[in-house]
Image 1 (cartoon, one colour):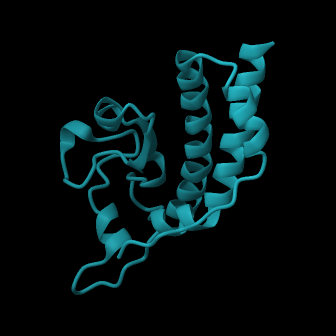
Image 2 (cartoon, helix red, strand yellow):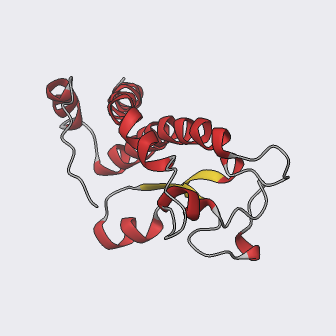
Length: 151
């Protein structure tokens, strides 16, 4: 079910030194931008994988409904910036939450499978495939943001 993944981040020593010279507010702004950039790496991969599953004979497209959203709930509870990557419409078929790709409530059947249908995941493999690249993008963008603030 859940899996712990360890990732090595290069350049953290220099990043920590720069962080000592910057206010918390500036850190959060740069962190939010860097997190969004990292989340977009995973979103792009998830969209590519979902396009392979989308039926071209229907107007609904799961790939168009994969979005990156600011996680206000986590931020309010913990104070840590966070983004969610998911399929618009969530876990329930709700027409009010329908995205530009149409009502793709069935995405969860593909991702997790059913008792009569094996899973054909696209989100979890996208995360596994692009996790390291996303971390590297975060560090790269965060350093650029800090350089703008410091200089």
